[in-house]
Length: 239
Image (tube, rainbow, N blue to C red; front, side, top):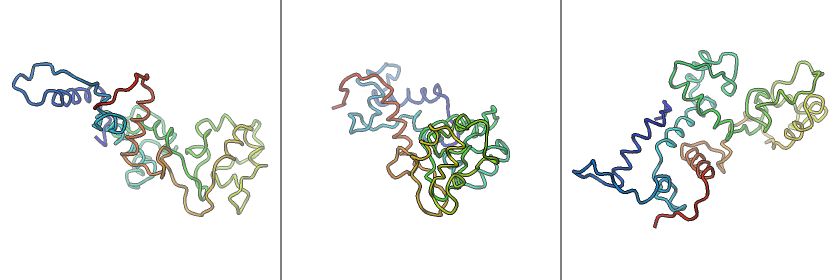
């Protein structure tokens, strides 16, 4: 479950078995279709939202793969991250690695969930060692090249976030920002809080209050996003 993103069809078959057991238990007349008194989505809601807190397999599987992708991005396993980079994205970062229809099921699974990381993770800036062009550090990082002022007057372009500071400080160099990026980008960059420390920048899971990325935190984020995407149907609590 933590190395392969299974198809919805496969996981739905397993869910069907679980649903049958939940509603019917073990019966000799197994072919009898059980009565579902509540939708499976309702049952999988947290108890505080009126559900029973049963984990949905599709969300569990996706959460585990996102956790694996996080480990690759943060190099929790430096050996694995180095192998993947050498083989699949030697000239780009994890965040901008091309989706080239890899034959590796694991790498393909990681790429399929990477957008969840780009939407919910950002680097907390400390030493400013994060790449300006290929890592999530600002709201506009994915299309930051579109915010460059043309013609480019600052050559070579700054590479790391620290290059955008006044030398020897953690203060934004407004003259450099204004001569490099559009006003919208400058405002977005200036809104970023910088931690005055010399430790390496830290990747944070933004939906989590402490910034820690755990499988539980990922699951809760995905479940909340799914519930917000559903139409409101009034109270559906299970009592």
